[in-house]
Amino acid sequence: MPQFDAIIIGAGQAGPALASRLTAAGQTVAFVERHLFGGTCVNTGCTPTKTMIASAYAAHIARRAGEYGVSIDTNIEVDIKAVNARRETIVSKSRTGVEKSLRDNPNITVFTGTATFESHNTVRVNNETLQANHIFINVGGRAKIPQFPGILNTPFLTNSSLLALNTLPQHLVVVGGSYIGIEFGQMYRRFGSKVTIVEKGSRLVGHEDEDVSACVRSILEAEGIEIRTSAECIDLAPHAEAVSVGTNCSEGEPNVIGSHVLLAVGRIPNTGDLGLDRAGVTIDDNGYILVDDQLRTNIPGIYALGDCNGRGAFTHTAYNDFEIVAANLLDNDPRRVTDRIPCYAMYLDPPLARIGITEAQARESGKPTLIATRPMTRVNRALEKGESLGFMKVLVDAETKLILGASLLGVGCDEAIHCLLDIMYARAPYTMIARAVHIHPTVSELLPTLLQSLKPLV
Image (spheres, rainbow, N blue to C red):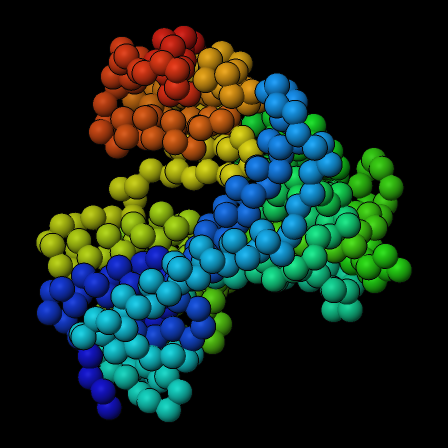
């Protein structure tokens, strides 16, 4: 039985980085990946979708060229095969780079296949049994397939299978009005498809504040996307035009007829075939591996990192999981999951960036809170670019003067948000930014002015 210091299962964002640190410390690592190196981010998540969003943005700007005084052919067409080819070039480079870095490391032995636990310290891959005192699970997640009526006899797409589509949908019906659904919906609308977004809840991105949801909806509707909310009874059925999506919405036709349907209703972890029961590892009702604040499972020596532990659903949280594990095991630096501040972005155009708590959560807390909002029309840079949709909102603790959270929806806000995030990590008062001098013309220069206008939240 091959003996290693560590076994890492899954080549997502946390696994390869951890393998590099462990081998640099003199350890031997068995690395197991059953399919594509790079995980969700590289293969079906951030890298491919943001590459396609860039192509969709180019088409959108081309159609608006007249607003900038530029005369071009207004019949803008998108070659989806060329879009996909560009995407695959970028994805392939990232994927190949991850795999090469692992295979070129003399202290890493790469195994291709599905890993299953035989015990708390042994893992079987194909016909080989591997043993190690430390095992790190980094298997990620995949699209959740809801048990809608008609799901078994109706063709549908997920975020992964949609990427393989080399034709442009005539009418894409997106079931799910949150991050994945909205990003794909706007993208394909800009490619030229008719798009309808069907959401079970009463509003889009329901975990965000109501003003954010309303602004997101107005942006999408302005581009010709139909929004159907309060779809309480969603069902699928084959149709002569491809697929019928039943909504039972209080307004509009009860069915939406489309050429393709994308299911974007959440994610589930890839833990079902790991044999975790044989290792004694505890999972929750949704299959997420339960971990403590340092990402340790209930079994000594077994850790879970990335999307499969339910403690974060982003590339940056997965990478931070690696940093936490490495710091505790190798650096005598007691880092914790609860040290990090919630932060993420939705790559709608313009993007929504979010940190900390929402206005609704601030109200629920009952703590004295200050709030400030400003429309993006107050940002010269946004006006000059012809992209002034959205607004900025920030929340501050009235007693400590610490920033509690922010929602920035506008051009460049996915970058500008870090001005506020870094101040939060520094535990510095908001006045550090309010009194700062920012460069003009930038999106970030509104932040000092925004913070100077704080008022009590009532």
